[in-house]
Image 1 (cartoon, rainbow, N blue to C red):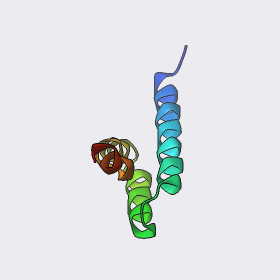
Image 2 (cartoon, rainbow, N blue to C red; image 1 turned 135 degrees about the vertical axis):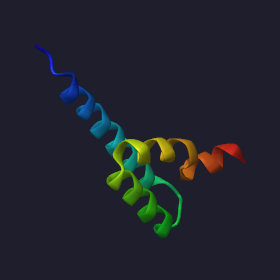
Image 3 (cartoon, rainbow, N blue to C red; image 1 turned 180 degrees about the horizontal axis):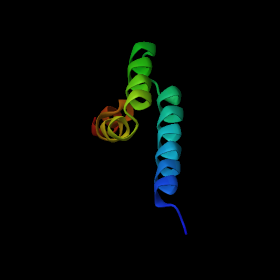
Length: 63
C-alpha cells in the first residue's frame, strides 16, 4: 500500500528546500537570511508557512 506519511514528508522536504534556496537568493541582509533559514530548518512546516506569508520577498511585493 502507498505510504502517505512518506509522501507528505517528501513534499515538506521539497517545499523547505525551495524556501531555503529562495531565502539564500533573496536581496535580504545576511542576518535576515540566517534567521529565516533557521526558522525553516527548526520548524519545517510552521517555518515554511510563516516564511511564505511574511518572508523577505513578501515585503517587496507589498511595496
